[in-house]
Length: 259
Image 1: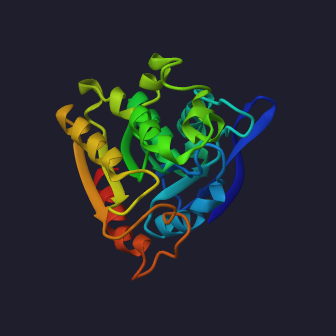
Image 2 (image 1 turned 135 degrees about the horizontal axis):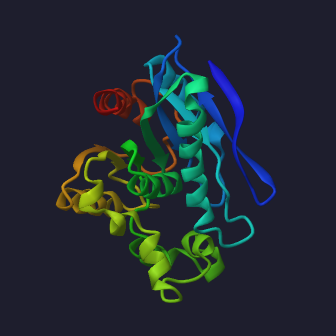
C-alpha cells in the first residue's frame, strides 16, 4: 500500500513530504527512511519507488523522502536537518501508520547516502544504515572532482556547502560521515554498496568509510557490484541480470537480520 505525499515538516515556507510504502497487514512494521541522490541539487523521492514497492513486499516499510536542494545555492546543514525531521516524524507518528518506532533504519544513494549516513551517526535510535555509492569524505570527493569542473560554481559539493573546504574546514569536517564515526555509535549496523567502475563517486569513498567504521568497532558489511558505475540504484528494474537485481536479496536479508 502506498501513502503518498505525507508531510513530515514545513521549512522555508514549503512542505517536505514523503511517500510511505507499507507491507500488507497491520504491523507494526520495521521502516527504512530513504533519501534519493541527485548531487544535492536534483532528484526526487519517486526515484525510490521501485525499492519502496520491493521492500514492502518483503515486510519492510519504506518512507522515501524529499529534502531541501541546493538549487539556489548553499543548503548545508538544512538538508541534513530534513532527514532528521523525517526520522523524528516516524518516531512521533509512525504508530498511526502501522510503523514500529523502535525499528528505524536509513537508506540512501549517492548524495542521499551522504545525508542518511550523517543522520544515522547522529540519531542514536537508528538501528541500521544502508548506503549505496555514497559520498562519505567531502574533502576527498572535492579533490577527485577538481579536474571535472571548469568553474567553482559547477562543483556540486561546493555548491551544496557554499564554498571550498579551505573557506570553512570545520563545516566540511562536520559534513563528512567518515569523520563522524564514534565508539559511542558503534551499535549501528551498516551495509555499504558500491560499483567497482564508478567514475562519479569513486569506490575509495565507500572503502575508506568501511575501514573507518570498522576501526570504530561498528558491524559493517560491504557489497561490491562488478562492472557497476553510478546512477543505477533508482533507475534499473529490480530483476535478474541488472545491478539492482544483483544486490536486492542481499540488501533485504541484511535489513531483516538487523532491523
